[in-house]
Amino acid sequence: MVMEQAILDVKALMEDGPEWVQERAGIVLDMYEQHNAGELSDEEYAELLEDLARADQLDELSDDFDMKNKFTVSVMALKNVIGIVA
Image 1 (cartoon, rainbow, N blue to C red):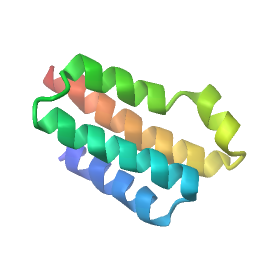
Image 2 (image 1 turned 90 degrees about the vertical axis):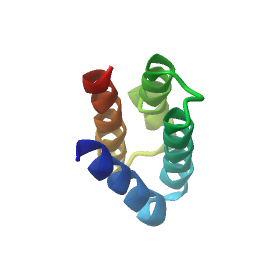
Image 3 (image 1 turned 60 degrees about the horizontal axis):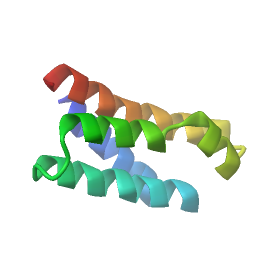
C-alpha cells in the first residue's frame, strides 16, 4: 500500500511539477520498473533513489522548497519500503 501511494505521488509530480521534477520523476519510475523486473537489486535501487533525492543536488536545480520537499518525501518513501521488504 505504501509503495503504491509513493508511485502515485511520483507520477503526480511527473505530470504537474516543473521540468526538473518531471525529469527526475521519470527516472524514478524507470528505476522502479527495472527493480520490479529484477534488473536492479534492492541495494542498488535504494542507493540510486537516495542519490536522486540528495539535497545538495536539488538545491542547484531549484529554490522551490515545497516542490523539493514533495519530491524528496516521495522518493524516500520508495526507499523506505525497500528497507522494509529487504
